[in-house]
Length: 380
Image (cartoon, rainbow, N blue to C red; front, top):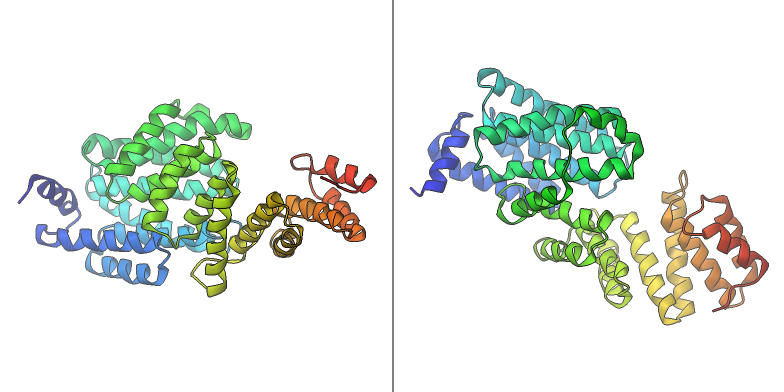
């Protein structure tokens, strides 16, 4: 038996998995993870139920069951309907890890999956802006991940936790000052080191490879403004998971940031086609975004009627999705639609929308432009 398989067998046998069972266990995890990112949630649930049944003491089944719910949240991030279910599932995974660690506090799987569970829970707390809860989870998760690495430096997947921490600890406090008071309890971060650690896992990890690629794509997109690096990971993700709407959305939006609307509109037409065909997780939020960017492509080309057609659809969906808190697509979509109305002589429709824009929060000089075009109709 080759050395790498012997090492992995030793790792998993610490949680009552026989050497003969490891190949099946590993294949189930790889299969289930692939199903999660492929947005095949029902299939993934079946796979991880098998893991729970056949390996009841191992935390992987519970952990990845929670990850299915996490990706349901990720495809509809402002919808909180799955939050409680996710928190409950994470708690079950943590309880199982605690049982393992009570028997052996150096068990790598118990440490790794508990740290991962706390990390993902903290991630959702941060998305929901529950900064104190996020900080508590992070404070508890970090030493677990370090301890797992100390006990087994060959476990590459563990390094994803280091990478995320090193990057966020260096960057987030400067972007979100409200977080700064909590950082006194944590080690100092290192942005460049974090990126290198994530890159190592992205190409060499087994169970966290795809998540590391996803993180790198979003970090280069949201924080680094490095469209080429973001695109590198987007292409890898799209190649393996062409029907994941989150990956596809980023892929198209990176083209937008590169001012390549021609390529972007091709991506978003494909998104729109999948929405209409009822592909899993291709919901109205992705439809709203696709309509917006296709409309902006027509605006760039000077096709005013098509601009009005697509932006009207985007604004209509946005008014439903963003009724409680108007955001970018509603604000900017309404502004650009009003400007298009002006160009085709629908002045009263334009005025109505400019006034609506003024009722929303200011975004990218939207108030200044709306006030300007209320006085004088928009012209190129």
